[in-house]
Amino acid sequence: MKNKNKIIILSLVIVFILLGGGIYWYQNYSKPVTKVSTSDQISSLREAISLNNIDAVEFLIKNGVDIEQPFDTSEEKQDNGFTALGWAVFSNRPEIALLLIENGADVKAAVPLGSSMLFWAITYNMEDVAKKIIDNGGDIYPQNGYNPALHASVQGAKRILRMLEAKGIRAEDNHIDMPQEENQEKILEK
Image (tube, rainbow, N blue to C red; front, side, top):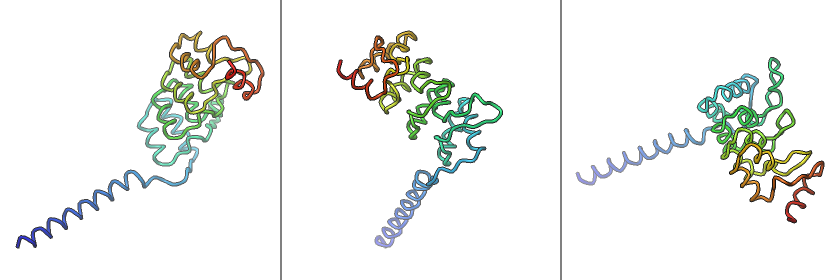
């Protein structure tokens, strides 16, 4: 009788373990393999970012929206060309920007209006976002007359300025119209 009870209990434990494992797998690994975005999904993503709705952004990411597909909205031409991360940083949505970076958003993606992801992170003093951009290879070197360290200094973003200085970028650096490789070499020589 005792052996029969042990077998029944052991069988139930195995069933619950398998059931729990199946639920865990479904929740964590049943995401779409490919990124397929419709214009409705991209519009929803832009709207979710605009409304600072991080839950909706998480939902869209989990369901395979392509976060690198640039927005192309005929009704609002100024939005055209922004990726989700660019729009989040431009719209001062630091939590969403961090979520997007954690999900692989390209910190080097072009931002319309002739600026960069780092420019807007500095403008809004988004220290955590700026750190992620800097640490993940975003554009940090002075070029075309723009110096992110000088911008951070003028904006009073002291922590971001220190992050840039730790990478060798100084507010007084003025490397106008130099290719980025030459900028890096010149800065590293200091």
